[in-house]
Image 1 (tube, rainbow, N blue to C red):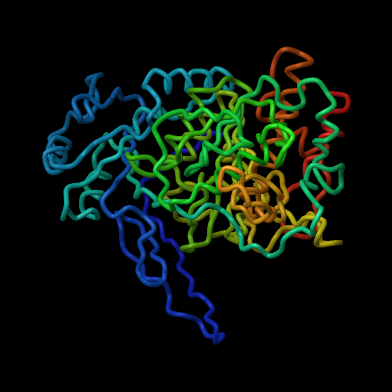
Image 2 (cartoon, rainbow, N blue to C red; image 1 turned 120 degrees about the vertical axis):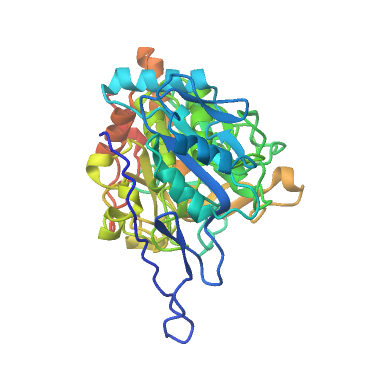
Length: 489
């Protein structure tokens, strides 16, 4: 459904943390930023970039970046004296497009989406980022831009959050490998899927939005980088290596085998030399894949409570990119995040500049994935891990613990990093590629049978309808069951 951005003040609730002595620790420091309260972690660490703004100009304007400046090419915007004055004030700053994908590619993506959905989608070419000159008052500049009639919204850009990996609560017992691929109710039954033509992801592209990966790992095969080179803010490529291994590790007789290893693997960096921008990575993926292909978002961000992670579409500019990609028939599989947050809580429908993506009427169309407990938890299997974010908008679950894959070296490390294997990959990070691999299996089989593709809504509906029901009370959706989803397809 279409949503409208409103330039209103929002108040982000900052709760204290329970200390080891049982008393409430000091409440997080809060900094007033451009009509909003931006939450800092305890100790004062800012969760947004201190000198970077993202500015969205109103629709129906033809404003594009030319010669390093946002320029009105249509004669309707940036015509007022106050706009010229604001551009003069920030003349020492650096403007850039929010999205790396070419202007024409974004226009085509939007046109495809509008033709299919008959909904008006945002013009992603109207998003720009502004790095302010040193020493400039970011609060004052943001508020001044917000008052311009040409401007729809001004946002503080999130800093990179840790990849959504939970603490390693346990490792699977010796000799138990890749059980998440076994038959239901244990796993998604990709072993059965591998017996069907196309169901290994044949003819499908999967583009992973991630920080980095080990391109030299012996079990990953070819991974194609699209867009700019990654700059990993955490200097650890194990996470991306593990994600790629779950759905795409090659069937080469050693190590592990991915759920949909016949799919073509692409990679788009969430953080580059230009900075952290999940939305740009999403549109870069979308511009390099076809209808029916898959974008995997292995990122999370702080929600209303600092350090409590939620899906990245909580940030309106990234939601717009996701929604546009889905409208253009790209299937987006998005981690719910490891924040223990209930997305149905009223705090997710207040503040945030009027942007409430977790309400049913504002569903982006992405498949949001929660972390379920593996069979090692006995009767609690398929219930939500305590760390997993949950709620009615969460569509499917994958194993959130004990996943055997490439990287880390906890299972095998004798031959060096290029043959590292792990036995305890976990969190919504491990759950998301389990679901993404299942999506690729279903899509590959459908393409093999009919020569066309399932839409994002059809894929989501079929995997939910024929999945193994969750247990527990926190909604994270069913675990895919490929045998049932593929039977009668």
